[in-house]
Length: 384
Image (cartoon, rainbow, N blue to C red; front, top):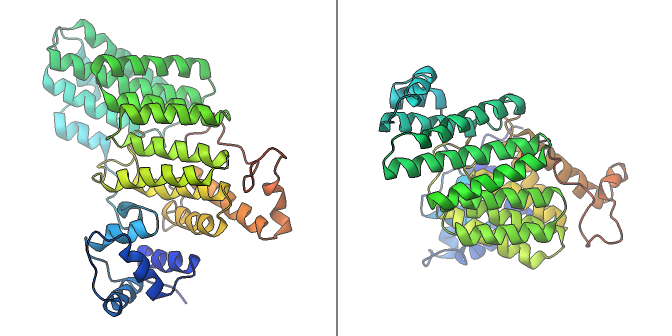
């Protein structure tokens, strides 16, 4: 029999079942996350039943329910769909690409041209999950050269800082794709350039993402202490920016691989609290925007590695649901692949011998960890 309830309602029921909670248990646990006193248990149980059946909770209750299950509001409840970057460039500036390029050749640069460049940069960063690496690398480097050449033009102080920032975002993008393509030397050099641009423009968010890239490089090479160092440096630089969520996730993943469950929880909770307080992003496709729905993916990875199999499995089911369209097309193939690995690992640890090779460990591995390698450099980071 089909379940016609909204996905969030099915998840509430699944999360409750994973924890072996009755409805009364769930309501009592909910109180611990509420900022104010809630109605009586009987009243809240009736409310809980309505939520489980598909009645959307009010805006007051949504973040409380999300916190109860260790996630964030926009990961649990519906979010806006993808934007059309090309249409926005034309709508915002009235310019096609050729006109933008021709304007860049002038001796001075007007604000309309900078607006068009800003949207173009956003569009390129949004192509990360979709455009072939070779093509994106060519496009990214081409636009980076064009923007850098603006430094020779007549610019106001504000325009100069804007050009530095745009150069920084494009350098971050190019560095990511270089690393994906296996050119670590070039990626490291580009990363240093991005960090220098962030320093010169006093742009904390770009600096934070540069540190996040450094953490990612360390994670994929097994340097887990290096991940923690880079993540903490980035957090100190960009404490109140959304990149701090991603930095907390990288730190949590490193602690999970080191087998420190307590530090995993501390890092995840720090990221969750920050993400819950941020507005929902306008463009989830932009590689340097934190997708709230990805927080469940971070937690899934960590819980699998520290041996919390039931939580990891429940989150893997959710990752697969949100990463797959109604027709079976995969929106997030790398996240989905990791979710399937998680399902395989947890099944093997429950005794499915057919999946046992996935759970082999070396004598030096912390209990609950596996020998599953991190994503290889030639693959896109698991945003795609």
